[in-house]
Picture 1 (cartoon, rainbow, N blue to C red):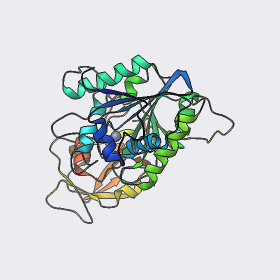
Picture 2: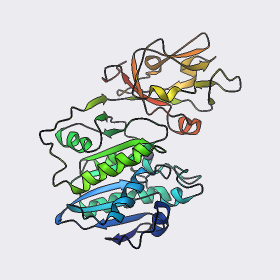
Picture 3: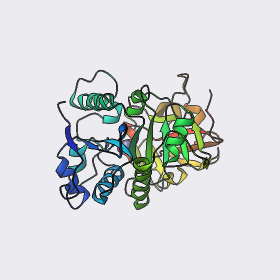
Picture 4: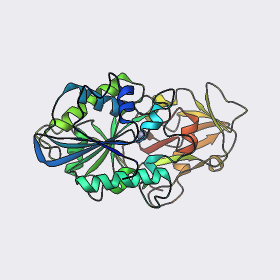
Length: 344
Ligand SMILES: [Zn+2]
């Protein structure tokens, strides 16, 4: 291992008196091994793949200071510690000039971020966990949800520990779950907005359930009935298209999105819902591919008389209000209004 440090059963006295001191104690990418009552089994908890998403690190810090012991062994991977510590704290998704770590979980693992990703996969292989939870925050405010690449009773049970909403998506972006999934049931949990106290609370409560439960892959009688959102399509900006967020059309940008666009997160929009303004045709501005690889831009948005509308009844989520993230990642994900796959 080249990047990760390994820490076994850290004592509450050593890990600092707040989460920032905890990260300084870790000093860089870290793997914490927490011994459980039953040490014949292991679960994995991964967090801070993105340095600006604090809920998982805060929850883990709280757990460690509580002095509790998990039901089975837990291997905790805290990845982008340096990015999180870069001032102001928890503001950098990654350090400038490096790749998004959660897009690096596929070969080639040539650069430093690729090496980190490869080491994380190596750690998982070594410990062979019965389940993997990868905890994130969304950049904007919004409700919690889980993401997995396919759906069965095990994933259903695993997600239900944290939230009632599940996105089933096979976009193969190079995220940890895309590859880890082949060996262990893996779920990405987005606990809510990175600045939301509620998200930190859910992260801790969910983490406690995940660490303390005897079984996490089988649901008891309390089937919550997950809300399922299948095969979302990403609306991406084309190269060189400029974007801003404002209350009215900005002449200096190709697209202006409404300031309150995040309010549509997980809500339904109709063909009458205005999302913003633009004077260019939608095909010039956006890219979107459905699951069979066909262009789906016209299924998502339409431009009429300088205004940008939803193209049909849709459910939108992971809407960002951050132009840099919209440009480097995507503006939002969409499924048909009833949660089903959009087909071209
Ligand atoms: Zn993230």
